[in-house]
Image (cartoon, rainbow, N blue to C red; front, side, top):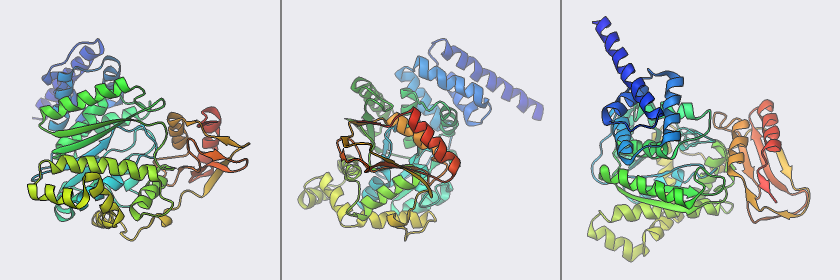
Length: 431
């Protein structure tokens, strides 16, 4: 029996290898071939080198829309799936914008409005992912049964899906992409949509930022991504809204797990020093997601929102201002095993610091997000939760001589030294 099983495993692996070879020379794959690759990656039978070859083939050759559909379907089918009743909301950003931790604000807003929003987030490919940041507040590695129980009780969760086999091939591919710090546009679509669908999502908002130093640099490419997201959503009968917008600098002021999480909590707490750009972006995303969900809700609820708040952005704003989102976030933290009494003021970054000061009176013209990502990684993020950068000044802000521009934080002297060297080689600011 064991010999037969071993023989079958060899056959399955050979099928996957043949399919990868075919894609590397630019040929189109059918569903059987794509499934064989996803199956072997999910079972971790291909190894790092062959998985990298497949990731590289997608980056260089790209996939047809039909292949994208097959890849998404295969990634879902080779893992676990969750099932919920009714409207299941979700949001996702394609990433590339340092500090853009809107999920920690949007999820409790939408859950407070009465919609289910079980959020499965990825680990970081670059600086810090939502799962890395949420881990500052509570465990994100939970069982399938625990997640179902939490969502049933409080409408929401913010977890890492890799623990219980949700689209398992995706996390394996992410790990090989980390070394090169890139992700193909097609892979972004497959990764996001497979996890949304596997998590039972029915109504999804996707944030697609573009800018000179982001993953997507041109509006033309952002529109291509938008069309592909809409194609996949239609194939799986998902209601989707893709928001394309220019983004020229980080969102918020903190970069790295503890600093980004602190920014998000400040918005939820409505502190006077909260980052308003993060708040506005979160309200925009939450408002669009609520609007998408409201269209398929009862007429009674639609009339109530219109008469009480004017529109869904107003609804989201009120939920935030009245402290309902903060209350819901504390419920999420508690149910996932964290300290619900945590406050932004108690989130302290690494003790090894270095403050960059202005050498003369000036104005910041732009911030290089790619170089900022390299700097954050050099400082130890996201594995070192307390490592990162605080931006004392951002684009368009005036700085006087000897005033702080940014502060570097790390958990050890070695990484702080690496950060200083990285900043010298890869400048963050243009004045």
